[in-house]
Length: 409
Image (cartoon, rainbow, N blue to C red):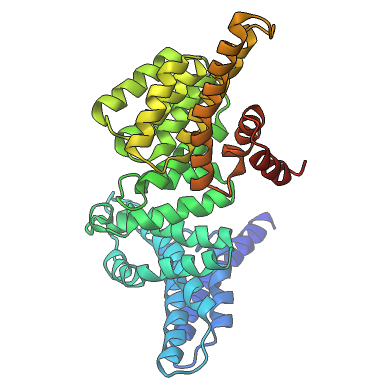
């Protein structure tokens, strides 16, 4: 009896296996018809993709890709004939084609019992995928513009990931695809919007050397390292990414600014100053580097040096509102420090003289803050508090009242 039952089990297994193989053939046949029933074809192939007897067979995945290819062809046929067509199906079929044909190629590369690889699918499928490759970009843009970031990332990511897939080893896409960095940038940008920082770190480096978006891609990398930092080693990776960014994109202030902030916040002013000096040796007229040098002296309360570099900043860039604002602030600070040590005795011979010195500091600060206001009238934090104090101390009634109104006092 046991032997009979065992034989029946084997027979049933063989029957089921045959049924799935038959389903794969039937799915391909249906998809190849003039008016295919894609719903039935997909139902048949989806069962085979899950079945233990057929899911590891390259032919199964090849047929799955073929069905998606046919779906795409029928939609594009309607578009060509100016009939209604489903844009979503056009894009999704391409993405699915990639998923299925790449899996087919992976399975077809598995050596047989004799250790030989007989991949009869690669050439044809690689040609199909290369032809449809631009639609991965189009699909990503479609969803990106709709703020459907997860869907957009799936398209952009597939475009980038497939570039290094063995199926395209002859094409060498990583070297010849000039669009790849931009697509990788959008993959990183989409991932950043989703706060998917591992994906940011995966895709942004592909765009790091691009002339147009490289500096922004490296921003994504640095930001991701900073947010994901959990220990000192992670922090060092963040700092290293900032240093790399400075070297690659010295004209982009993000990296240098954040690096100086890191040194300042950790009281590593010697390192910050040395790094600022190094950059100024290379770019002596760079307004941002001059500004940072002034900022460092400012924080160290080396006010005369700060004034010197803030003035150099405004010479290098006459529209640098922040430099004018900080220059004004230095003069106000010097006025306050001097006032703190000045005599308050109005009968003292020194009183009038010292008050004139204090007044001069405020007078020197006045045009600095007013210039900051002129350059950035909407950014009141650069000038409103400074002008309030200056106009008050210089007894400028009309101007003081105007500032009071702006401050809502």
